[in-house]
Length: 23
Image (cartoon, rainbow, N blue to C red; front, side, top):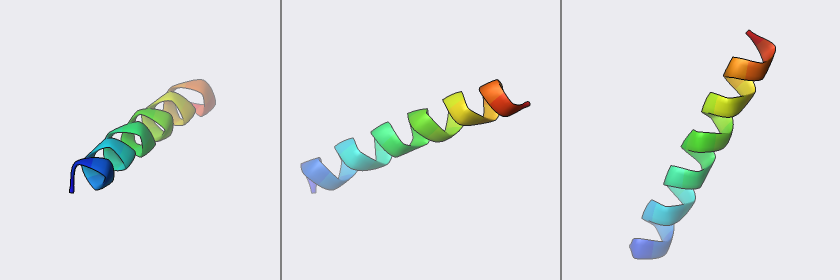
């Protein structure tokens, strides 16, 4: 479960960065 939580956190961070760069 820890690995899944880490992946979700990384994906969320990437999505936030992409939104900031695009927006």
